[in-house]
Length: 109
Image (cartoon, rainbow, N blue to C red; front, side):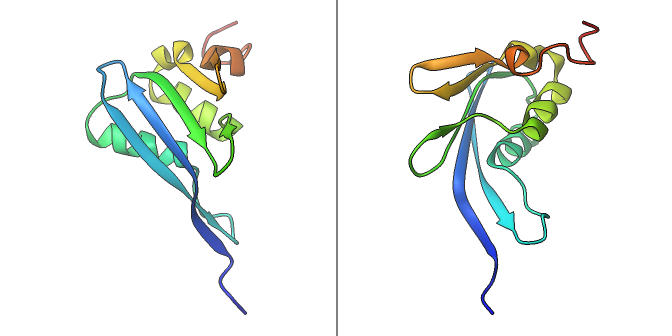
């Protein structure tokens, strides 16, 4: 039986408010212990003591992907200013993280 995992099928890039770019890739494991590319990019950003995301994008081999719910929540909790981050969801299409997390419990709305 072969291994049931992949790495790098999705990549993500974050540009911080400070103008730095951090990247990450996903690791998909059969047992669910992997992580998304956005998580890897945020971890890299945090290693450099930054938390404020200006923009984020995730891509697979053939398309731009919106962040999953777990990644949306993680970015919001890392820094509440990230609610105003630009999230690239398609070619020439972006929304704020706030738009992807309406009525969020941290905003009190």
